[in-house]
Image (cartoon, rainbow, N blue to C red; front, top):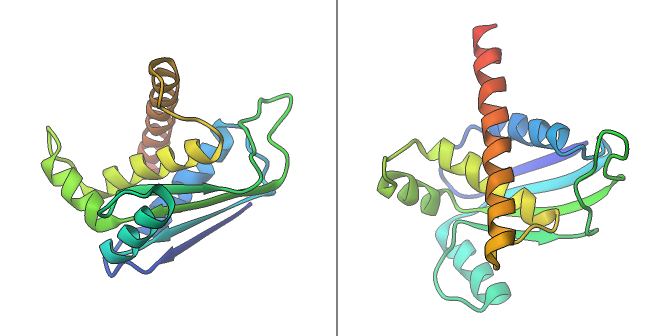
Length: 158
């Protein structure tokens, strides 16, 4: 599996946490170890340009996903085949603001974990435009984050 992380945002982000998150999510979603994904962290100006170009919406956003091979989650018996999942673009500045303004406030890293997982689910064809789809996507997102958080606690205990 190739998980490429590039930080052009100017904000210090613990990329090793994002790498472990993606490894956990790949495992939970039965994605082939030969699948590839890129994560790009950009500043607000770059994110706004992408948001306008691809979504025709003004202002920066928190996460954008650009699927490539239209892969879907696998199962234990039939994992997702190898291929290019696509690109996840994150804006740490927007994530930092959202984390600070959330009720309750939480660390920016937690917001980036949520946004990265959200972006991966979009790469795998999930959407939240309709209520049933939103319930499925956000439920799976929550389950993936809980699984990762538990794995991180076990890792920290040694």
